[in-house]
Image (cartoon, rainbow, N blue to C red):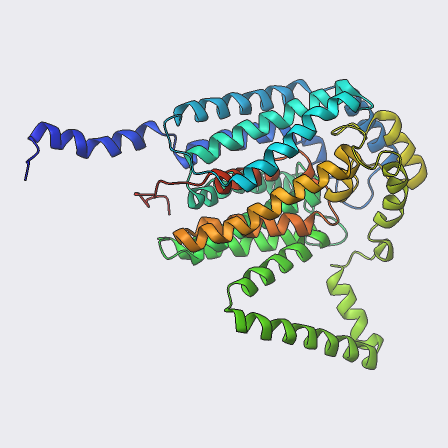
Length: 445
């Protein structure tokens, strides 16, 4: 057998260390993302204001002004994200590709529709700006996916979202807000519903890391899961809590064997029917406390899903005008339309409060079907990748995609270029072209 010379052996043994030294660490990337996302999305004016007595007229005026022009700080943040993404892609230019062609095709087609929507947009300049922002997000997500393993994505989510959520909570408390009492909600520098999504994704990452057999700090991850759930409860976001509960139920269900899945499905239906019969038989003595718990003490407009149903009825009339291709990506919410919705609904908003309706308004039925096809293909592919590699990071990607689909029923957060959206798209990219490299060093937890 040919023997290596000492110098040759030293070079071979040092090469993995050299490569890992040259590659940015997960925590370095997390710090970079946390800073840039704070610049892009977070607003200090929101701190301590989620107490139930917000001035809707003032908010509507602010939203109209924001729709007319871009924010220079936000633009700089997204350009920096794009530059970081390009640098990460260039750094890993020699890494082998392992594409899932079905998923890649859906992603490419959806992106093409988004780009072409500039042509038929009612506001081409606004569409072009918003498409540019999305392309920046896609670049950084792709760059991250080329440099991280799925398990490292969990660590990146923790390292990015934990400081953002923690800083928001400290700012809220310092401003005199008490989200643990009364009608106040924990939102910090974001809307409480967006902060709730941060907390839910943080909790899912902590759960996966705690269940990973390779984790060295399981107590830490279980503690982080408990903290994230407490903070999620303080946001009083009913949609996110319900979406997270559904996600965990789906995750548990798919982990069962096929016979157990069938039995459990029948059992869940039976228990649900018995619960409805019990509530109906006992009456208000049981139903009122149950309803209060489900609504987290927020009874305002509960029958109309917090005003969503009349809003959707109005927006569907707009969608009927351009059902196939929409108004152009992110071009529906102009200053004049924000004012129209406010005058009709007495609600200052810039979103449809549904990912699916938001996509319909922007890129029509064609684009919506392609986006959903890509997400569903990624969801199925994530489970298959886990079966092939036993990398718990793929479980996290699966759970986040299920959570996004569920949350998207009543919220539009995942239809916009936000921190949670970019991290989720990073997971889709990991599934889209795979990861042939196995993590050799588990020192990150």
